[in-house]
Length: 625
Image (cartoon, rainbow, N blue to C red; front, side, top):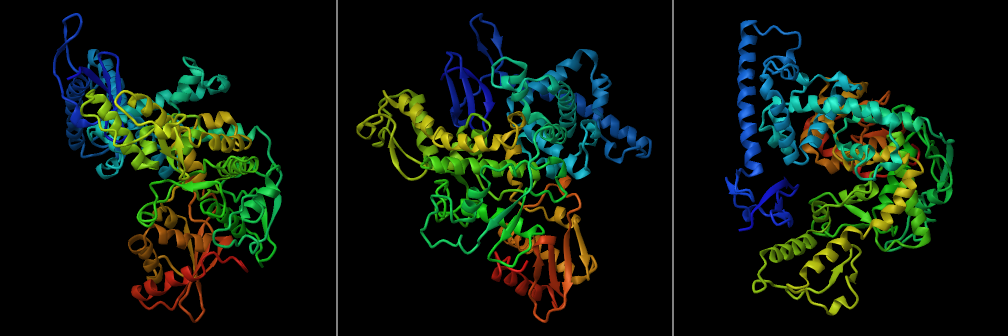
């Protein structure tokens, strides 16, 4: 046994161990850890394992808070449950904790320090709490940091189970999440007051205030953060609105044909016309009001752009990017042919895209990302998590690499475990050499002549370093080009305040369609909300259709398959109208986000049999829109 301490719990359930001899094991499996209650240090003083010590202190603290919680419930009963705020009944207001009414003076700081250490030991818990708070800000349409009081942060047990690290850190006790939110809210206020004086050029310089703020950007709430971002972007240049002329027939390539020059696909035609333009610099203050960077004129289609052709053009460009018609993206190795129908396909920049023209097209992708960031018109791209980390100059972790290629992850962790055991006799190289399979299917050498160098116990450490570095840096060149284009549209200081998840959501939205959100922003023409056909429609969307089928419905009605977030709908409405055609097929007006339903459906089963069939038979049609 090697003595050490648990530093953190990783995303994949493994542990980061710091050994007493200074060595570090980043992803130790749980079965390799044996607990110890007391171990003598160099001064022969007994000390508890840090993990056990924090849990013991936290359990004692929870008992005291629980006692106050029960007293608060009893007080509510005595007052017949009368309270100014219904959501605060039976809760322990964190303000009472801060005023030392729940804990005495001697235990107050110990309480906050214990919560701090507990959340630090469970990486990701704070970030999940911020996500939970952001969701409540959106649901309640709040904008300012002080609009949400800690006692009103009251997720149900079911909702909290969707945040596993937060749930573990709080041990399921919501009062601890409320107190932690109070601590984060105070920190947020201090950070946003200081942003005016920050030099963002020093963000990556260690031990500076700027670097510290950069390190906690994922713990900043989105509503005040985006308000600050919008102010920064408004102070910059605002571009002119242009007209993009496209030919849809020219973009219909034959199977196996690749538009390497970027001239024939819709993406290529847009690239040729827009690369040097400032159309991307839309005013972010117009988000939710139909802000568009340009009008689209499909020269070979009878389509007038009142919004539909614009969304259709962006959607088509994204579909081309995530296909074999362009050489800029590749599927991750995990998304093989057998799994394509079972899981969401993820894409990466093609590491073989190295020509000068491909570099410019990658920059154009970055500019389109910047347009989506500023205008809230999402790009329907499904990119792996490591792409967003590369764009923000962040370290790529093992969990990100596992998401790309599980076979690579298995080889890496197996060799790491064998090396850690330290037994040459039990080491099995399995015929591996100093090579790796690239994301585009090539076999590359890690060292000169690596094809002929087998992995042994003696050189395994070097192999692991090269093997991981090669995979981490494989798409860094392509991501640099994308970031270069992105930074011409979105200021670098704005990107520096984004977490990878926030950047992805801001550019691509969520691939999961929120039916409740869609229904809240729906009005009806020729129908009433409680008509049977309307009830059947929402039942189909909620209970019968899977995520792919829901996206087809949304794309049919709107020419895009991702919804704006709650705060950015503005005057946008989803319209369900009646039509009087004799058939039982739906119609749509994508410019006006209108779905037209016939009144001839006789039952739920009748609508189920005909509705989706009509949508699938005219998928992608915009002629005459």
